[in-house]
Amino acid sequence: MSFELTVLAWALVLGLVQIALSAAVVNGRSGWKYNLGPRDGPPPAVSTLGARLHRAQTNLFETLPLFVAAILIAHVSGREGGSTRLGAELFLGGRLVYLPLYAFGVPVLRTIAWTVAVVGLVLVFGAILRPV
Image (cartoon, rainbow, N blue to C red; front, side, top):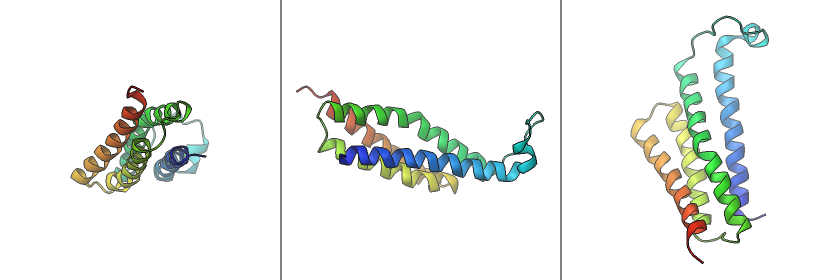
């Protein structure tokens, strides 16, 4: 498996981790009776941490489909290497740093981490869109 596909697999693991973290915090607050029941009534208020984890998850899921598609296009078209490798590293690295920064409410560094991830995505796009 190529480096870029390996990074893609780890990005998907990160997505699963973010789902689990968000659910654990949010569901931990609402309690097992509410979570196992029909949830007909309004849910209990979400904690600040739970809300942040959910927003971080939503934010990842806005860019993850683009990353998946870009890496798969790079792989299928034989354009992996160089900027796709760096782009994949930046995307995953930025997303890994972004999560705790968002969870702990660190404003400026969180935006820098997000920007690093987007730059990584742009690098992969550049590699697949450049003329041959």
